[in-house]
Image 1 (tube, rainbow, N blue to C red):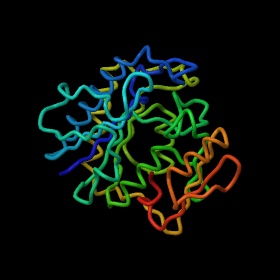
Image 2 (spheres, one colour):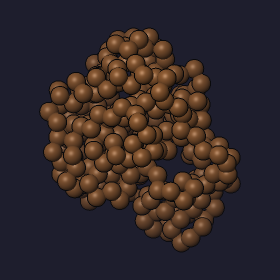
Image 3 (tube, rainbow, N blue to C red):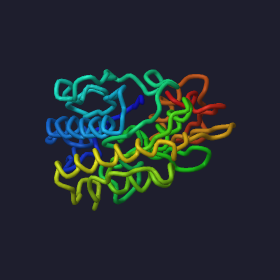
Image 4 (tube, helix red, strand yellow):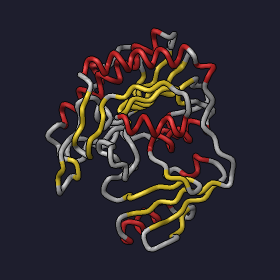
Length: 267
């Protein structure tokens, strides 16, 4: 069994960070985030192996603005030996293929604008106010699941704060969930003890893969449209230009990407 484990850097237990005018979320917890993300990724690996996984890719897709570049968050020496590691900012669409049997999302979070989401945002807390997929609000959990689905790979388990887990349920149905904390506000939460969170993640990863046949990839029929609304017009025009010919401005602060399959919506 071949499993893809994508690890973000906001949804781990006891992580809330703090507001900062320069980095949006402050860096006081930066090193602790790296420790927790590594520990929770390792728990997912253990659970996957208990269910029979013999090939595992751990994708470091986190980011700690002001402290760690994209994809260079985890402590790689502390991950279980025998895994392969995707790092350095490589996107899902370059690391995934149809040889994977399942995907697991660790350390994820709710989409921008969710009041009880801890550090809720959609890809960029500085520039993106909202994303909509075919008219429906979407965050990183839903969008990443569409990318995996394009390769025929189902997302079978998600760990996140409760708001992120709620979002995963809305997009993915009866998958296994590991809620690590309950958000009270952007930087307020009531969290599981870190070790309890790791035990829960290990248990849910194992449970998900033991019922792998219950899951199907997330797919959508064309035509597809991803509309991105930014906080300012300048941000929208800059992001639109960076996407190239696939994108066009559709409002003062919004641009749209249109395609026939999800991989062509990614940037």
